[in-house]
Amino acid sequence: MGSPYRLVGPLEQRFGDVLCYRLSGADGRRRVLLAVLDAVRTVHEDGPLTPDGLADVLDEEQRRADAAVGGPPFVGDVVFALAHDLQWSLRPPELPTAPRAARPHGPLAVLARIGSAAVYDETERTVRTYGRHADELAAVVRAGARDPGPQPPPGAPLTRPLTWLDAERYERQLALAKRYFDKGDVYQAVVSVQVRVRPHAPVHAYFATIAERYDSATYAYWLSAAGTRFFGACSLPHVMVADGRIRTRVFAGTAPADDGTGSAIRRLREDPKYFSEHVMLVDLERNDIGSLALPGRVRTERLLEPLVIGPTTYLATDVLGELPPGTGLGAALLGTFPRGVVVGAPKLRAQEVVAELEERPRGFYSGALGIYRAGTRSVVSNTIVTCGEIEGDDVVLSCGGGVTNESTAAQELSELALKLAYLR
Image 1 (cartoon, rainbow, N blue to C red):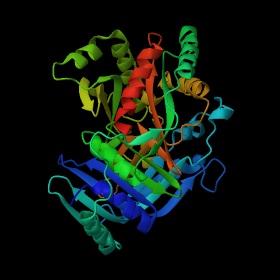
Image 2 (cartoon, helix red, strand yellow):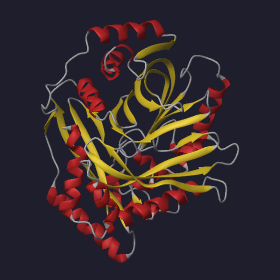
Image 3 (tube, rainbow, N blue to C red):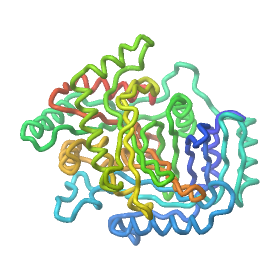
Image 4 (cartoon, rainbow, N blue to C red):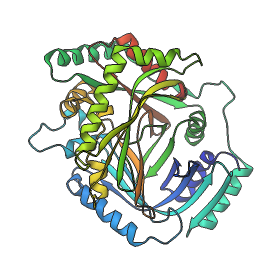
C-alpha cells in the first residue's frame, strides 16, 4: 500500500472520531496506528468531567484497560490528549489563575478508548486490522491503495498565508520578557506564535504531506475527537513509561539542518546562549522527574546529542527516573505537566509570564498526546509542538522558542520561520 497518512480522510468520513499516530516499538520498528475511537469524553473547566478529578479518571481508565488485556493489539488501549491550558487547573490553589486573555475556550482534555485499529508496519509495508470494524478498516485500506488522493506538485507551496509572523508584536513581547529577566522573576521563557494559513489541498491531504515531509520525526499525529481536530509531527516526547521507568527528552537550541560539515552542531554546542538554555532546561526536567521518581534514581543520558528533524538541527538530552511501584497513569502524565521546555524556568512563574506575553490560550499546542498500552503497561506520548489546529477551511499553526536575556528578535524570528518552513 501507499502512505498510511492518506487514509485519515476516508477513516474520519466513515467513523468520525479517529487517531493517526506514528510510533516506534521496543523492537526499533516504526508503525503507524490508524484507530477508531470509542467512549470519547472531554474535560472542561465547568463541565461534568472537570480537571479536579482528571488524575482519578486516568487511573480508572488504566484499570479498565488492564482488566481487558488479552484482546487484539491496541484495541481497548487509552488515548489521551491534554491541552496546554489544563496547566492552570493543576497549579496549587494559592497561586494566581490564568489571566483573562489566556483563559481556555475549548476542552482541556480528550479521553477515549481504541475500538478498532489498523496497524501499518513500515518495515514490512503491511497493514493488519483488529476489532469489530476490522473488515471495514481493511476495505478503506484497499480503497486508499487504489486511489491515494490529491498530492501537491514537488516544490509547490502547500498553503496560502492569511497571517504571518508579526515582527513588531514579537519585539514588544521580547522586550517585556527581558524586564522579567532583569527583575529575576524568570531566566528563560518559551514564547509561542500563531499564524493562520489556508491549505491549497484538502486538509487531510495537507496533513499527509506534512507527515511524509517529517519522515525523520519520531511522531506524526492526527486527532479528530468530539469536535477537536489537530495534527503535527515532532520527536519531542511528553513522557515515556515502561518497565517501571519514566523518560522524557529536552530539546533546546535550534539551527538549520546540518550540511554534513558539523558546523550547525558546533554552533549550537559552542554558543553560550544555546548551551546555557539547554542545561537549565535539563535541570528543570530533572527536578520534575525527580518529584515522581524514587530518591536518587534520576539521571541523564545522551547529553547534548545533535538531532536533525526536517529543516532543523537541535540539541537533545534524555532525562529518566525509576518510578515507585504502583504509580498511576494520572500521576505519570500530570506530575510534570506542562513540560518545562514549553514554558520556561522557573516553571511556575514562567507559566504566568508567558500567559501575559502571549495574551491568548494555546489550546492543544504544547500539550500532550499519547496512548496507554494496557498489554505492556506502558505509555507512549509526545509533546504537541509545531502543531496545526483546524478551524473550518483554515489551519492555525503554532510554534515557539525559548528566549533569554541574550536573545534578539531577529534571531528568534528567524528560528520561528525555520520551524514553520516545512508546514508551508
